[in-house]
Length: 327
Image (cartoon, rainbow, N blue to C red; front, side, top):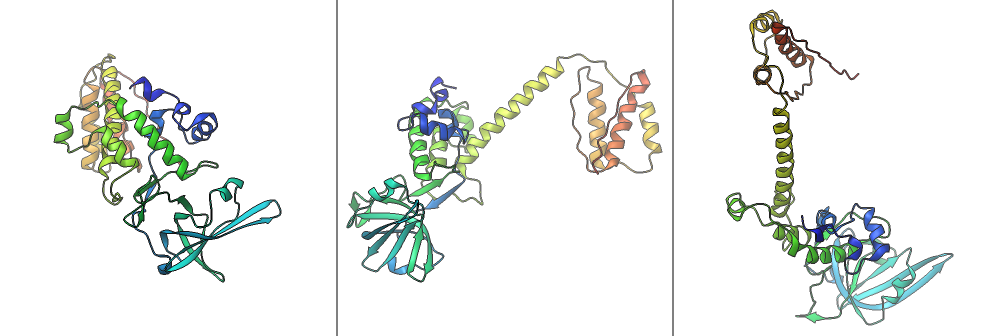
């Protein structure tokens, strides 16, 4: 892994110490951490809905001009209402707890693109605490595509003080900084034969996909990342197994007593139990430490395993059998 990927997230452009502290609460301390902080969901923000077509319960992306800005103070709390209008209608955006800088982001006559959930009220249609962005450029009658609108956008797990627009900005910069230093651990031939993307392509697509991922099927980008994680896990387990096999142990053979005991059991072993028993006997005769886990929901498989251990008595070796019972 490149040293660049281990560099502190604090030094990513636009982060700094304060934001780095918030990111650390989500387990993001390095560039590599940012890469693996995958979205929990996605929103398709490519389609604009006319304000006149809004109905309560809709989740929409809308575009219009700020026709009214109404800040209110209620004790220590600040409330802000902004009316957004287009030729077909209007909707009220509101914030119950408006931070002071929020008011400065709106100006009468300016255009905004907004995403949120519509709800009805006695005063008309409203969108509470929406995500928004000031429109600075129009192309073909629509706002230009940005990091937060006009595309499929990632939705990340948030924490207090750390919101989606900030997370997307950090992730975009982290990806740009990281991609040149990502090292592919698989040859192109293997990736091609398994129909897997490159690691660089996968991280780009999983954070900022071209199309809305079909979560009911395996997303190709996530599939590639998960494949590498499981490969590394299996590789680690293989190395542990190799280490165990170098640790010499007595060769335990002989099945005479075992066969006799099996015949006395008041039940017949299932195929899976027979397989587990055969593999255990085989391991005991290999001359190195056996490391085997057998999971069973009932006591019968446990008993079969205990009987297998009895095979060691034939050559005067001891066997310990322990079983945990949960009530």
